[in-house]
Image (tube, rainbow, N blue to C red):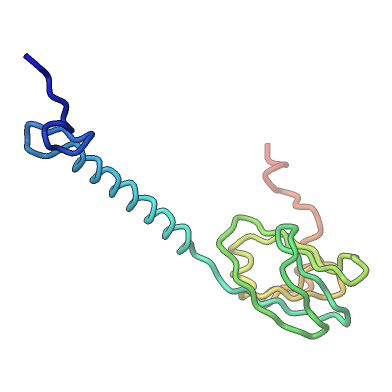
Length: 155
C-alpha cells in the first residue's frame, strides 16, 4: 500500500484531516487566536493599571528639579505648581534639587501616604516633606524620634 502525502491529496501542506472532520490547520488557528487574545488582554491590563495624578508645588524661592525613582520628572519655578501622572507603586522616592544640585526636599512615600496627602507634594526649603490635611508640623517633629515600642523592641 502506497502512502500519499497530504499536499498531494489536494489538501494544503501541513494539513491533516482528523477523525472529527476538522483539520490540524483549524486547530492551529484556534490556538493562535487564543494566544493572541491572551496577549492583548495582558497588554490592556498593564495599560489600565490604576494610577493617579500628583500635584507638585514649589514653595521655595528657587528653581527646583523634581526626581521620582531617581529619574528627572519635571522642573518647577518658584511658586509654580505642576501635575504628573503616576502608576500605582509600593514606595516612591521623591527628591527635589536646586540649580546647584543640592537636595532641598527628599522623601519616600507609599501609595496610601500620597493619597492621605491629597495627591499633593509640597516642596519647601526644609529638605523635608510638608504634609497636607490634618497632619501638623508638630507631628512632623515628633515623627523624628525613635519608636519605643515598635516591632524591633518587642520581646
